[in-house]
Image (tube, rainbow, N blue to C red; front, top):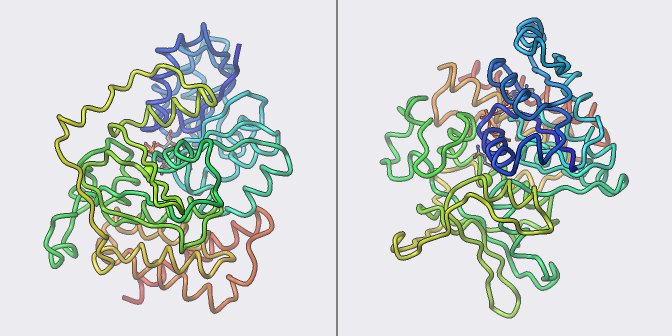
Length: 390
Ligand code: NAD
Ligand code: MG
């Protein structure tokens, strides 16, 4: 029986994974080692009981007693705190999904790679913040990373049987998010509630707002650069409001292989769960006649400066990915808390990148987790400070 762990089980991706695991037989088909979550203790305990997990971990240390009582009588171990999440990730399992949100996913992701495990990676921040370190660690430990972000799963699938050498460029698509059709002048007034609605995908609040600002696509361009080793000259973004084509690989012979599907994360999660096999999934087949038309447009970088920042971060190298990611997380916290406007997130991130460049943060990519965390802290302070200066 295959053993599995899910980190960030109670989130949007985690719930989709849980749905797939339960439909595939639950505890009868999988030996669940660890499930981790955050503040939603009741749901974490419910999932752990359903999958008969060995251990359930909340990242919030003050919630340990609550988790213990929610698990009373089940024989499931309870633990709490970020170190406990990483320790749970280090427990041997055949397949581990990282569906934690933010840079908090990096230490447990590295713990999976350190034990030579298979890491199904929804947590794009792991690669954005520490791509070279993460890829080198995977290679050293003969660990496997399987992309779960839909665009990266799409590229990965389109590349099966192909050679990266013959790839002219790769295109990932963006829906354009909540404000795609808003008048540009109105963006500065956008509220958190308005930014938290996605036209096509149902996702956690943070990635939904990142879709509206295009920071999600900025992170994904860096993620594709780190995972596939493609230079910025071979990475493109197109706005595609229908979210049916997730990515397209264009070869030197002029042929392009696109990956299409309804916007349902269970496809990408299920592909990674069953890889290299293709199992039946509870995902409806695409009905192109019902969709009617697929449209594409070049992104407007005045509206979405995040895309330019991603390109600059890739060109800069060094700790730029860690800085961009952490500064973005800080700016997003500040926007959600009402401290800055929607349109002030990109300038705050740009400010952090400029300060890090001055501190020679881009001369060398971080060699270990400590160095990543140093630049992460630096970037959060710099982004928060910009808000003070505004
Ligand atoms: P979410 O906010 O819905 O869930 C996040 C999960 O991580 C929850 O279980 C939460 O308890 C846990 N968590 C939060 N903070 C934590 C911390 N500090 N330490 C440990 N655990 C913590 O997020 P989501 O939308 O499911 O996204 C998860 C990841 O997958 C993100 O990296 C996101 O960019 C990526 N992703 C999401 C989607 C999607 O459809 N939601 C699609 C592609 C990629
Ligand atoms: Mg994506």
